[in-house]
Length: 269
Image (cartoon, rainbow, N blue to C red; front, side, top):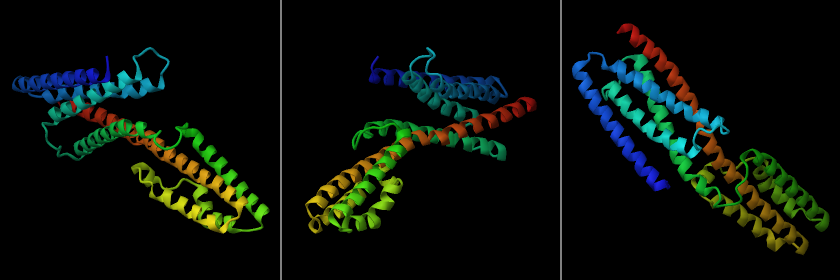
């Protein structure tokens, strides 16, 4: 089954299930006095099902469907949970402090899920646009290696030419650049002007250098580009991984509060 067919099937099942839930909720409210208990229990089961996606990612060796299939299930079940939440609250903002806090957590979890979905769809195809796609955990070591190579080139330029032109430029503009990640926001939005400005500054030194220094400067320019490529990978892969550190803690906090809410609601009924 290709992606388009899966999407159409998922949308159809979501629409059919949401419509059925709406009809059942309407009919049960006519017959039952506390239908909120039923919708709340169903919502809790759905939320727990959604958390299984994170557990599935931690157990990739088990034959529990492919991760892509679980992702599709997670997306459409997440959308269905929003419908259930609306039915449970009567499409109103809760008035009590505890209920309002729980609703706010649900909104935040849902919003972070939508943001995460957008990131997971948008970023992977752009990771290979500039530079080689590298393993995220290796980026700091690769960045440090690039810095050492550039510093060796700077020392080589002074030794060969007895001139400090490249060394002065390194101290003024490149030491800080190579020492840490730079232009984080620019890399996230794909704005390359800082990179081009730095390369232009480096290349403008060419007229002050002899042949040996020009060769060294050319190698340094390549390292500037390589470092910028690593920074882009770090920024985008970091965002791809980092949003989970918002989504998952919010989810577990919501589950704990929902359990307390459910117990209180059961006792008061």
